[in-house]
Length: 239
Image 1 (cartoon, rainbow, N blue to C red):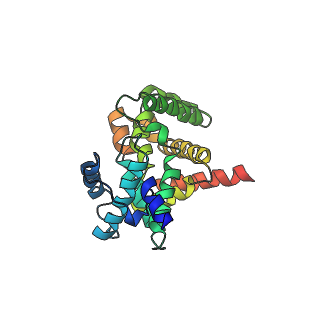
Image 2 (image 1 turned 90 degrees about the horizontal axis):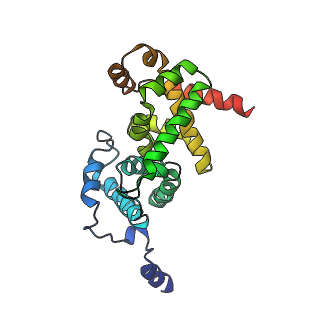
Image 3 (image 1 turned 135 degrees about the vertical axis):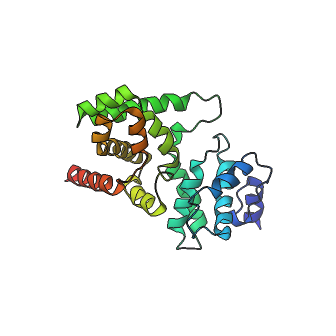
């Protein structure tokens, strides 16, 4: 009796018991974004989507200081898919894992429309990525600095942790590299991925005009090669 009463008063009822007001400011945006998230994947039935929506609404309420962003859908869909084999804990694991996954990318998410932190963070992160690239390919780093396109890909990919770049199976393989024991390690892995991503397109970046470069880099067809290089690099770093 005490447990239920205290949870009700403290606002921490179990996820399946939680009632979120439908008038929540982001509810309409959330409905639209959910329909656009992995739209061809048949796993995400209306019943599954309802569970995922409940997780998202709870996350948004608990983290009310942070603006809702579309990447939340991609991240939550991916987590739920991976954890779904255990039906008894899938929602709970997804909800808590969501907090862990968001931690390394949170600096690029605005708290509100007046937050100036994310643009500064994105600019500084882009510089770090170029610096990492310069350790292997100085000419490529200089070209990227001249084109000023790294931040475009940071803005496009990081808020969804690249889940909006690839199909679900590919995202899982990528996350298996990125996910680590701390937010700092995951952030470092994100930087390593960005570095390997641009290195894999060296010939295109060095030999084409800006419009063509952006078009070809958006194709993102070489994830397997990138992951192979990253795992190879991590293996030799740890021996």
